[in-house]
Length: 387
Image 1: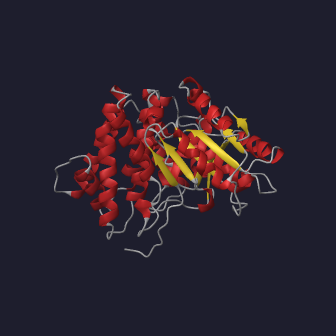
Image 2: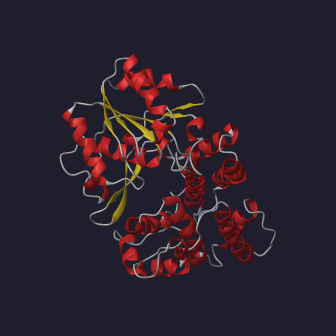
Image 3: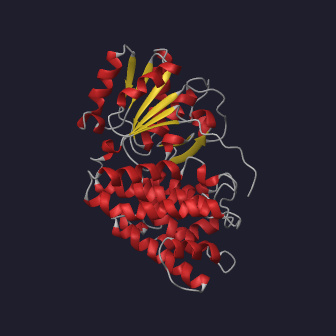
């Protein structure tokens, strides 16, 4: 077990009928806010009207930023920064899924930065000061509600880059599973894939003294897998939605990474380049790339970890580690297919024409990965497996 310091900065408000609980949390740190959301689903479920009525009731002035899209763009970040500066806003309320939350973190960082907020994504700048933000989650997937990370796309350069800082952790996140009832099957399944992928990124480490972290990781994946058919067939099953929502948060709030190396993350970096060019749903991209990555990096030295996952999650009964590992990869692909996710690039109409470009961009800052260091040639081979 490696040394670590442990502190969570986000207060979680979990459950039903708790919207009013955001008011004292907002007033602790802000008085004028930016209300940010996506394509309008919060209006169709009535949440927007409830929030506006609540803010008016408590005389909290606000400006709106709407239309934040999946794979949020730097253009929305720039507009949010402009609004915060122009109206002297000192708090951001992000209402939606991970895309809205990520966009708002980048806005929070950009308000007090004199340069272009894209500088954070290309490692030209670091976050030193940020506007505080809170979130109301409407999609269980990214875990952005309890961490300081964000991923932003640039349509001009066809790039998708990550940024992060502890100061960007939301001061509170309201998690009401009822707000996810109307999420369609595709995005529910993509969210499930994202949750599992986050756990796996942290699970795949060459270290062996990780029994506690591994056990928690396996439990989160098993819970997500077991709840998946329920939420897909019974979208208003509160308990199933609640389990999925909480696993989403726990998957990427730091809990699984304390006391060990920080995880592999090469699959996410590769997928970012796929969705940067082709704008596919992040979870769908992960369902395609993760099994291909596993197939490529698996060898006799690390087979024990892949086999452990296969046995403890996918129920593979095979004493040979390498054989069990391969069967586990096949089982994972079968699961992704069963929930409606693609498991090959051809299923989403992506051919081999951009493999070199995607591979080059994925390792723009050097080789990637922890289980195996990957360069451009390796990434091209992974993408070929994914075809």
